[in-house]
Amino acid sequence: MKWILHDWSDDECIKILQNCRKAISKETGKLIIVEIVKHPLAHDIFDDMRLTYDLVMFSHFSGVRERTEREWKKLLHEGGFQRYNIIKIPALQSIIEAFP
Image (cartoon, rainbow, N blue to C red; front, side, top):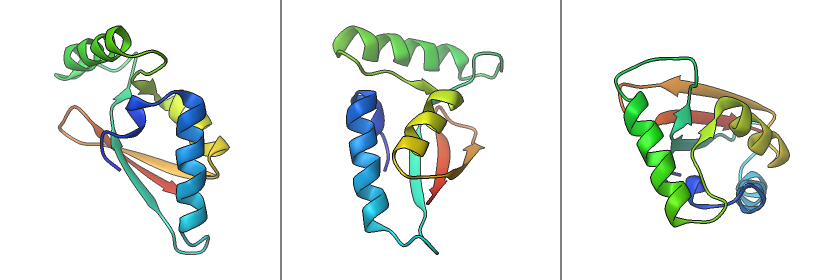
C-alpha cells in the first residue's frame, strides 16, 4: 500500500490493517507499506519536506497525519501485525514491512 494509511484516522487504519491481516498467510505473508515515517531526532535532506507534508495533511483533513515509528508500531500491533521492519530509502517515504 502506498500513500493510503496517512489519509485515515488511527481507528480507520486499524480496520484497514485488520482486513489486510485476514487476507494474508500467517506463515509466509507480508504487507508492504510505503509511507512517511517521521523521525523527530534524525536529520536528513527530507526532514523539512516531511514536516511540510504533515502540516498540509493536518490543515486539510481531520484526524490524519504523518506518523512516527512509535505510532506505526501501535497501529501495526493493533492491526494484527506483531513484527515490522522500517527501511529508510533516499526518498520522502520509507518502506514498512509488516509481518503477522
